[in-house]
Length: 226
Image (cartoon, rainbow, N blue to C red; front, side):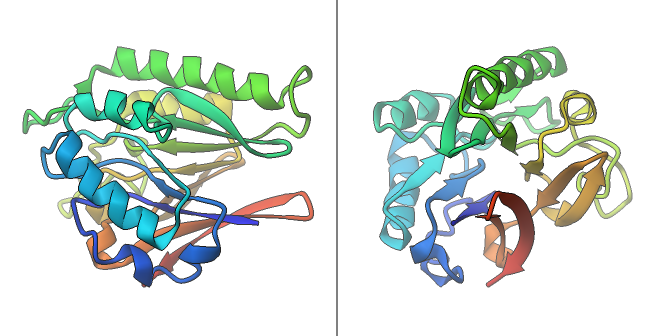
């Protein structure tokens, strides 16, 4: 079984059905920035297009989505921001959207302290699903909109790292098996932080996506391009 994860959609709704294998995925997961400073109506346009490609869609807000989108997605049973769910026996998904503070005053931003708290609380939910008292296996897929600071995944063209220090500290300490991030379009690529495989698919309009596979108990991920 496998899942497709895309980030930074920014209303590029004509691309979902072109993702290789999207129709056969267990779910299509949108990691944030569904819209361009849009609210529920704009998010619905994106979600409906995604559901035409795969009826099972999970999503969260990025910094470019209005905060009200979280409640709207939750009412539809699609929200993963600050939530955890069991994707398969022994595999939990945890989601954290928003971004840390930017110079642009985007709609959904949080302090590093708030981001750290959200990551910790959501990770605890995920561990409860796959830990000793949950569905054993202990694997966690983290879908975090903000890229980790000080990596190849958060660098602007001028070489400046603009990712989140809270996300970096969380990944260094918690070591989820896989993290799919976004936010920094130019940071498309893959890196390892300890045993955690971190992938930034980049802007969907540029054709980027990630595929996460679970086969015979082995969890893996790779970047793809339309």
